[in-house]
Amino acid sequence: MNWMSLSEMTENLSIEIIGAMSAKVLDETREILSARKEAGEEVEFEEADLDRRVDPRETYGSVGTMLIVGLPMPKQTRKKTNDPMRGSVSVFAVGEDYHRVMQRETNVLMERLASRGLKGQVQVDTGPLLERAFAQAAGAGFQGKNTTIIHPNWGSMFFLGLILLEGDLALERELNEDGCGTCMRCQNACPTGALDRPYRMDVKRCLSYWTQAKASVPFWIRERWGDRIYGCDTCQRACPWNRERMDEETDSLWEEANPELLAILEMNKGEFQSRFLHTAAGWRGRNILRRNALLALARPECKAGFERVVPVLQDPSAMVRSFAAWTLIRMEPSRGRTLILGRLETEKDVFVREEWTAVLAWKSSEKMTDC
Ligand code: B12
Ligand code: SF4
Ligand code: SF4
Image (tube, rainbow, N blue to C red):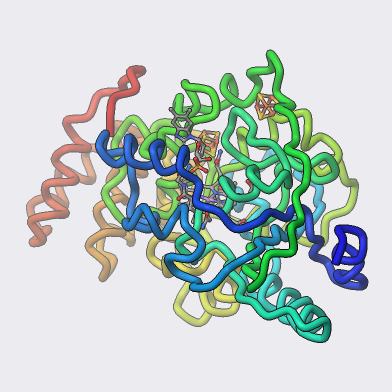
């Protein structure tokens, strides 16, 4: 089968086959991963076994050919509202969860491939293989300085999936050249310095990571949180390759992408399920999104919400309760401090007491420290 007949197999689907290569181990990438591991730069969402991340046969057995599929993210207006009481959900997490869309579409593709006698398996996001590294190796795009894979038609606004076929079809695509040149827009736009070194990301400085992490969020990260509810698009919005995908006039997903912060904070389990469970923003659970709403509300311009945050000091979740002090003090420093000092006397949970005490002692720092 040649490249032409292969790419026709996604007719009438939203996915496209954007790269292909004979299966191989990515030795250079393994070295990079090993150096990151030694430097303690890994995070909990990453596969710990390095061989499984760079060797397709470690997990998927007999693999001869790797196809890279791309699914474009929804095109939408990202014209921000001036309303400070609304937050932002990243483009990748609005609409139907991409894992589901990709699964549905790749199932159809797999059936079509099977009708030509080809057998294989699919990986989308949650598998061990490093999708961006294979996408680059297979010529599906180039890796930008913000570390995303950039495709000539979609910029970086697309999801990746891998199809691991038995048998070597000897399909190779030309490697895409680096398309960044002297540009540094993403690096300059990143609010936390996570892209200080081009083509590398310091994950523990990345706000997208912190919107998903369950650990306590460092104060200097909280200060740079902005209005984020889930994910971060800043280094992608800054990228000239994404200009077209960001300029649409209509947006059916606007409400979902710009939710009212207090509504997220106050949502019950049923509301969480109907609002988020079908999206990619739901997997960390309701309280992580409520915590993120607290961090997004922690700005003086949100002080109209002060009275509605006060009851959260008695929330059943100690984690959520612990963050409410930060929000109230950032909204209205003097009123917030007096309130928290009073509540400290009756708060029983040691973890919450420690968090509130640290917030009371906190002084604004411009310095970005290690996490
Ligand atoms: C864990 C994870 C995250 C983590 C950590 C990401 C990271 N950099 O490590 C967090 C939560 C932060 C995250 C954020 C995002 N993610 Co994510 N994430 C993943 C996941 C599950 C694994 C990635 C991983 O293990 N990374 C580890 C590092 C080592 O990989 P890497 O950054 O690609 O590293 C390469 C280069 O940076 C470079 N490099 C790294 N260190 C060094 C050091 C030296 C010396 C050198 C020379 C080079 C170098 O070489 C590496 C190999 O090519 C993948 C899916 C998958 N299974 O692969 C999705 C994935 C990468 N994420 C994706 C998306 C969409 C995002 C977000 C855009 C979501 C958002 N809007 O918030 C952001 C991206 C922000 C950004 N600028 O990259 C897409 C990327 C699509 C694309 N077009 O590129 C993927 C592929 C999911 C998918 N199936 O579509 N993600
Ligand atoms: S996703 Fe946000 S915080 Fe992370 S590297 Fe990009 S701009 Fe920086
Ligand atoms: S903003 Fe510029 S440097 Fe960053 S990924 Fe895009 S083209 Fe490359």
